[in-house]
Image 1: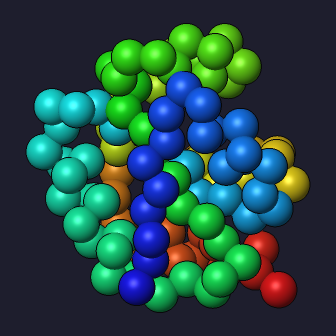
Image 2: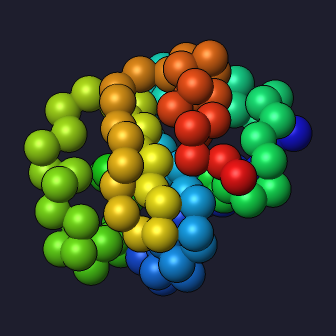
Length: 109
């Protein structure tokens, strides 16, 4: 089962220092986001991947938004981004377990 780290204005820095990251951007009032988070807990990714979620509308993430200006262009949530060595290598909107697995499969060791 996958553990999803709730990111905030402080722990995102350490999270993005991980080698292989799945980042999910949502909103606090998004029912599709909540459903996606619940589906993710049932998947089995290798331990080399860390999964984190952050709500676009949560307080205290101004520094994150300044450091990751690409999120200003996100207009559909949930929004998924795959990072390898702190570089975004893939991204898409919506929740789909098979799609996530196919996106990360090519980057796993």
